[in-house]
Image (cartoon, rainbow, N blue to C red; front, side, top):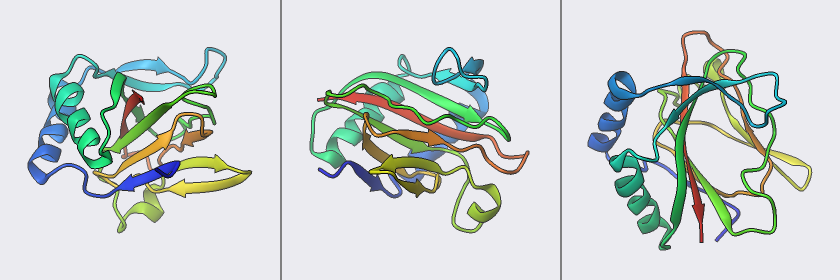
Length: 168
């Protein structure tokens, strides 16, 4: 498997509607999440590990599309607004077989991406690979790839990405 794999339209329309409703009505956000304790910028976090839809159903879909039986050890959502810029970090320290999957939730699409921004930037061999956070896109990547989530550029956008921490 490649180090970064993208799956478009990961959830069905009904599944994505369920996710949208969950974040509109039931999500419990907490402010103050950061990559490290010394970071000066933090953002919103919503714990999802105990939510059956994400822990059982979505992880089983990740297993199906990757043809692998991942052990998921953490799930949460990050919420970012203007100026809540992430810092480049690793999700796991090498050598490990840990991977991460990002599922983008916000209504970011090819029509508004140039205005909204909010890309995820991966650093591979001193090159930046920028991936658009299109709604319902799943990005699976090795946890030891340096990356950061960019903040959206417009105040009315709340950029939500769900992170699934996986190990082989």
